[in-house]
Image (cartoon, rainbow, N blue to C red; front, side, top):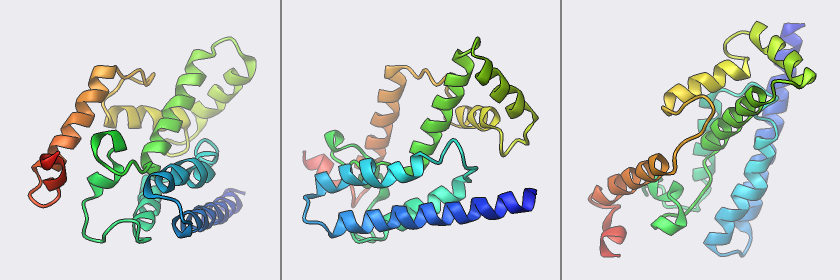
Length: 187
């Protein structure tokens, strides 16, 4: 039965990936301006994958490959800096939503929800089942691992100052790059 579940899961992942790519292509072929294209990708295309994050066991490598595939569709120069693409528009970037970031946020938010609902009997059942699962399949364990990676507490309550510092560091790295930081240095 475990083999059948893995086969079904890989088929579903493949269908979701194809639908995501189809939507990205349609958006990029449209006559929207670049700002609206980036918003549409985040709100229409990434949404297809977001619904499956809590249900299907995605691996980070698979999501990174989807991100990489998104960047190859001529919305950005092939040799352009990736940081510029994922930096928010307010800070001088393109503002594209990162699939891996959306996955991590969804998993941490679900884990926080499960921790905060102590009295709900259905949540209790889910927690007991989740404890028995392997490390790669347990949402709580994945959320703990992600939280340790991004150095936040397990509840996902990141302070505003910490978030702003991370964004500033990312922008500073981008500005310091000899070729790619020219625009931001001029502004």
